[in-house]
Image (cartoon, rainbow, N blue to C red):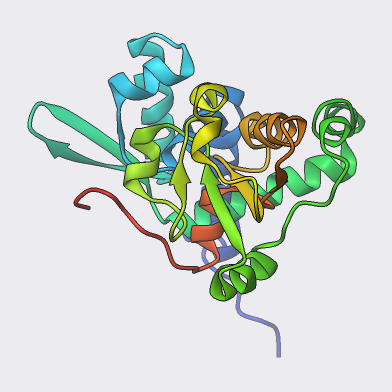
Length: 231
């Protein structure tokens, strides 16, 4: 018996799915949009805040956000006069960006060169895995240092973490005890602040390591987080 063919007016289900996946892939196909997604992985932001963080104009930031919204990677809510953007499914989007990064690190020599010349050259020690950090936190064996901005910290952070933004770290070193182990983290696997913070702390005699990934990856893994402001 011959298989029944789908009518030409009805696209093949696989093709329809691939069309929508291609729209998502196209939305990811710009470095500025990837940076915006990294910023939104820390929490909600207005267009104005994202424009200031990224160094783009308000109009350009808004245009990129609309592309991400059409691909259903971000969503909006209105608060007063401001429209706030957030990821549409934190865990899924963070996992998607992480998979993109892993493919790039495996297949693109230039990414490996940057990783070796910058990240690996500044920190030859293996970062602490999320699983190992969770065990150390439960045993009370580690001091957590969040080097992101105060706003990002307030929207969500690892349980018990102390917030010292990287640009304030040098003048606030006295707030950290020399005894024990410090684990620093920031915005994600390509955020330079955790690497720089660990380097600066070791130079001052602290026992410091960095967390594998960052806050978004910790949250996407379903691990506990805290906030310092109403959701």
